[in-house]
Length: 305
Image 1 (cartoon, rainbow, N blue to C red):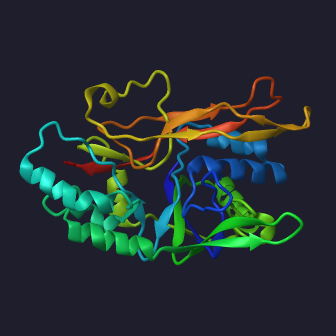
Image 2 (image 1 turned 30 degrees about the vertical axis):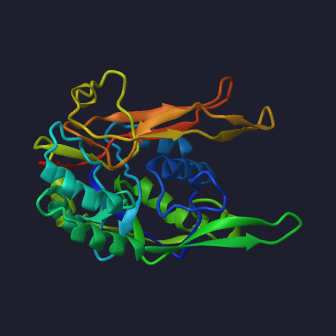
């Protein structure tokens, strides 16, 4: 299935970070996949959707910002085995800014990958661009038990890359009215959808499968039979994210805790791609599967020092 770019223009949304009074700029592929499963259930096409999406060639990325160009997750920094004094001095000038940097415009990626061009001035420029993507606020919800809700107000669109099909297009079209994220009953999370071709600069990196390093675009995990040599050789750079939470059991009439799942986060860097899969994280004794999307999607970086 060919990849397509799905651009979403939100006004306000609440994407949870573990606390009700905070909100993330973006969301994961697994969050979108779960929402699409619910949308398919409402439209009486869940079996068709599961059959389509569980094919190994169905891919889906995390969401990333889009202004006049797409952004990518910032590649995690590989650790150098030998550090010169000159290298340490340069790293010290940029590491504070890098700690707050999450995304990078695709047209700035080449400069960032080059250690001679990855200067503190470039990092400051990228931070300024990132800060202009959104505004975070906290809204007080009044009532008998008042509480605070973190809200993201958008100055940009978000996009995902996904394997295109008529069914996926239909579900995404329906989802724009249902909304994504939390507090949808309060009007948050609705978006305007446009479906576009992938820009050439991004497409060219998607096509690079064997030259140099690979940047992960989806929180995901290899299958048991996929050996990631980078994990033992030290060639890669990765961060683990924990997926957990609760799901409702209609038979027990209570919230049950899903199985914890640890995945490599988007932005992790490896020398080789992996396929990954869709993991059933249902609680013990739960009457139906609870799926967590964990299939890998990568873009090529080339050399990265």
